[in-house]
Image (cartoon, rainbow, N blue to C red; front, side, top):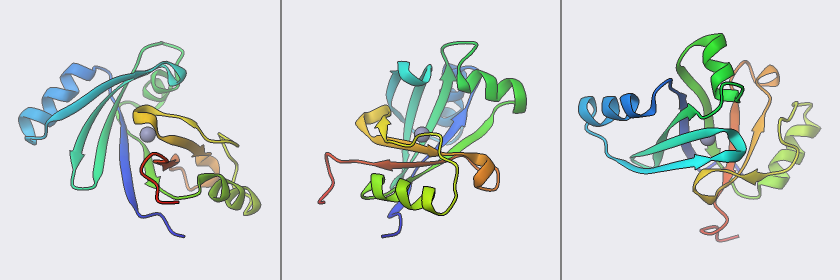
Length: 139
Ligand code: ZN
């Protein structure tokens, strides 16, 4: 089963409020949810564009992964998330293909999704997130 769509694009920002203004005032999108994910040391803001979301990520900790990403590369696109079914099987498949996993098992991300990251060293420099919405999954 291939991914059904791009669930979201994650963008690392230095200041969440400034970035929200940009997406609202310049692009005319509406932020529908702001959520802190303590596990990942981020505050996130979500916008819907068709079936795909824009996920803005602001670090809540100078040692967090988003803070480190911005120190190294500056603000910008951080990851691309694909909506999949049977995320555990997808992870096992990726591991069998020799892909380095950041998460060998899914964990809870923003919006209650089960998420797991593949290591960008194995994926041409793109941090790929797999996510599954089990509450809406038809199995
Ligand atoms: Zn994400």
